Amino acid sequence: MSRALRILGLVTLLFGLGAYQVLGAVTAFSVANAVVGVAACLAAAGLWLAQLGRNAQPALRGPTLRAIGAAAALCLASAAVYALALRADVRLDWTFEGRFELSEATISLLAKLRDPLQLTLYYDEGDPRIRNTRVLLEEFERAADVRVDKRSIEDFPDDEDRFGIGSSNSVVAQHDGGWALIERPTEGGLYEGIATLVHTREGVLYVSVGAGEGDMQRSDDLGYSGLRAALETEGYTVRPLPLAISDDVPIDASAVLLIAPRRPIPEASLGALRRFVHQGGGLIVFLEPDVESGLEKLLAGFGLGSSRSWVIDPHSGAIEGEPLGRSPVASAYSEHPVSHGLSGNRMTFFRGTRGFQLRKAAPGDLVKGVVLSSRDAWLDPDAGALGPNDVPVPPAAAHFDYQPIVAAAEIRRDGHRARLLAFGDADVASNRYLRALYNLDLVLNGVHWVTERESQIALRPKSGGRQLIQFPVPLQRSLQALYGAGLLVPELLLLAAAAVWLRQRAG
Image 1 (cartoon, rainbow, N blue to C red):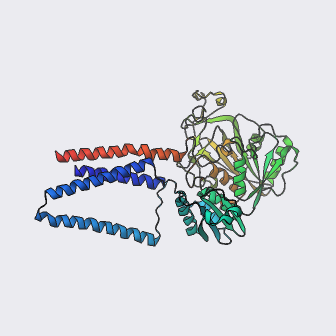
Image 2 (tube, rainbow, N blue to C red; image 1 turned 135 degrees about the vertical axis):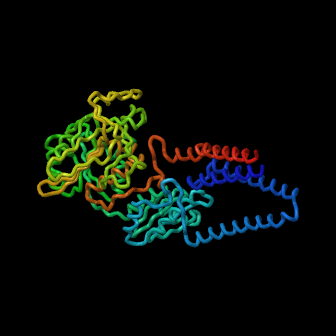
Image 3 (cartoon, rainbow, N blue to C red; image 1 turned 120 degrees about the vertical axis):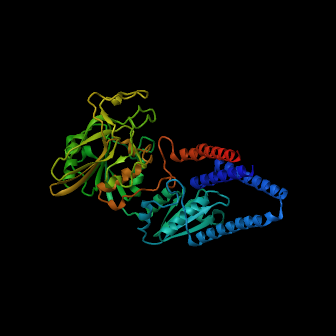
């Protein structure tokens, strides 16, 4: 019985501590395991002492004392190792996606500091959130010339008024005479706040308007205000461009951004875009399946052809009422700066997309599919008529292959080099989906590549620390279920195996 209790205590304590380390928070699962583990260990110790008292013999005293001494020595050694780790400032981050390891983009941002950066955490006594925030701020302090301070809001009422602090666990970043208030101090929030102090305006993006394009002022799920904010955080100046009344693209444009025009673009405007490319300008175009605006012909002239057909990927399920496979979750990427850091474990989501047919328009052009569907996908011109419960059936002439759903071209015209990037879906950049999976990284990396700011290409921190905002179920919520009830299954299997082993041993 004592041996069974020891095994039960060890297993439950390990699972409880493991769940706490991974989630970085106390959950019902970790607490329950800790309670059961401690109770089992105490019961096992009580049984062992009772048995020791009943069977006490002089000959056993020596081995017993040696066992107790070994246990005490092990505890002392563990304490010594812990003390050495603290002195050496050794840290292990076991959280999913490295919640307390700074991302590439954050490290790159901190490298641009001209002066020391001051991060001050304002808190109310007893706020449990400040522990995680303090650990995160210490990572910033370790990575660059960053000074971290902690202040009780109650003790600094003037600061509360000066910075407009509205709640505990807020951080004020100060640099080069400016400051920014970060009320949700995750790594993503800190990155965006610090970027407003560090980034200088390095390029102008003109966004086409007037032909039913996506609205960068609109803040609901269907708008693109999140994209505008992300671009401004990265140091771009965003300006509207009414193509229908513009003879040419302004000379200060780094690139032109076109978000899924719903109405045909006048031929004169397409000519202005074509001249802009021939002069070395960049285009970032978001298309939609089953919609023709004239941009399709323009892109085809540079090697990025596409049809109105939908990409159907049977490896992607029915998402948010969409028919099976009509909203690909992409995990295949070619080697390209736009796909930097993306892999089979770092996916991107497209709610309905067209594919591209790539062909060099001139010798020396470089055209490439950057994001691809699975190899079993096909193009279907009639998929737009499918209902939520319909199952797509491949046409008789369907060609199954990796379908490019984001494509890039690097061309040279009239002595100028230009870059173009085309997305088969505009929802990937909408407020609803921009921060789903790794969509934000893909879109911003694409903008940086087109504008020849490759040094800015990096994986960015997620808005929940390094935790992903996933679609359709937030990954952190899924992980909590896994580390909670989900871990109960392997734990019970392990305990059952131990019970069988003990029974066989007893027999």
